[in-house]
Length: 419
Image: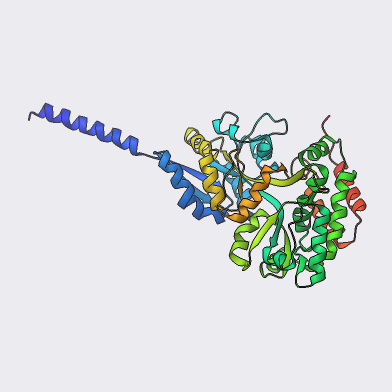
């Protein structure tokens, strides 16, 4: 073989090798998150499913502990070292990052068509023009109950307010169980599992929430005071010393079989499944009167967005579009029962308790917690003040009317509805 032919052959081989190497160089996307608990789910289920369909793109899940996440992410954005894909807190924290130019608008992402306006509300600008995170999961409120206790006492699942209190009376009269496990010491429990759980039934969910933001309703109106009147009646069923009872105390009372009903967020499902030695069921917040429309707090909890300065924006958008797909929704929601997909395509849950919660979407109108969008940006913070007043009402230190007035006065001191 002549030297020229050999050189040509070596050159051709070298070009082929280089081309092959270029093709083999994968793009690696880094996914920021505060959900350290989800590491195994991402590494073993979600990322492999994406990578199988998207050769050439690798994803690295890089979580930061939840209490450090916001500050650490902010510092990485400032330093230009934040990951390509950002797990988004709901509402103001992510909105702030979008306003700073750290998160990209995702209006053009095809998968966004798979989500309702309520699903997108936690990651959409006040004027509704830009959505900047793909909605990933919500948590649903309701009541988890001890099926063995209900069967033993012959109690049917309550659907109305009157049936709910009749069931509590029956449990209390029997004396075997504390009727309901909830304390007021940690404050947030009284608001989140109490006021925000049952409240949408009275203020008509999204209808009332929108009117509050527009200034067309006030927290002192009957529809907003009434949930506090109902919560005040709860105090007779919470057991001795509920004022000193912490959130973990409430969880333990229920999972040890000492309480019959637990006002709940669906995030409890995973833990309760491992701890409770009895059969559990769940029911949505009872309606005021038979035949009334039912409402559930189906609260946006977690989304995922694009670092506006990512060097791999196109690959990251492929990943985000996959997160917006029904395939992702099914894997994610079943891997983390109690964190429900916000995708418009319903996901069949393998966990029976999770399936019970998510089935309410088919018969009840969804809303989000009333304090989370816009109304907690000032001082006093309406969300935190609602914690305090919900506990005060149940403890008997504030009347429902006095609590409502304090909340509205605090809101009026800084919030002026847009005209």
